[in-house]
Image 1 (cartoon, rainbow, N blue to C red):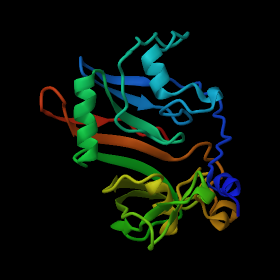
Image 2 (spheres, one colour):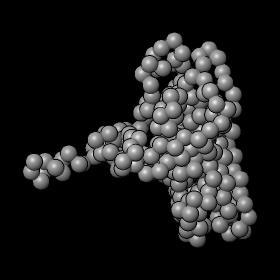
Image 3 (cartoon, one colour):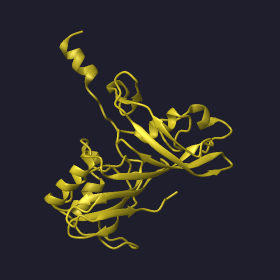
Image 4 (cartoon, one colour):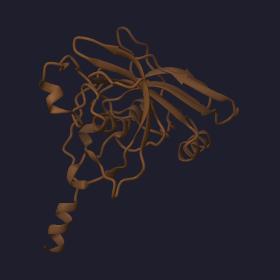
Length: 249
């Protein structure tokens, strides 16, 4: 294979164009250094390389959001930085740094894994155990983009603790609280599939049999994954902060 052929195989082509998101970024808390915000499902955290994917959480924060008939305008936070991201389909709480010092502190907390996050996810079927841990290494593979894979040879350690919140009928499904110990790309999505209970509404990691069989829940119009809680240290005061965003499904 020639050098040019190799580069073509290794090149990732992302043709995804995000549909317009009508839901707004909600500001849950604000001070001089940070914001706690609620990200809607169906909005990118950062604007994409494709010029059509200009709309994002970061874009709306830096430029402000215009007023609507039911919502007030939000100010422009020109120095806003995102120390972490949520997937396009995931809703929920995010912390934002509003100046360089705050952003640096938050970045370090995420790098040191001292930030704790909790998620709520609606899974297909009934999860048998009331609580447990999923440990399955995750590897990136350019041939699978944008998906990742479970790989015990090349994957990096990935661990997710879970606890059943409630089990539901018609169809059978389980509301789970996840506490990820590591923070790999698509970790909760692929771990859910790995232990046989994919997240409802997931377009990348699902079980075809569950998606089309008698226990299918075809009412999911979005990825049923929500970042409900975040725990970190305030970058200026040093006080512990707990941010919460109520479930939206």
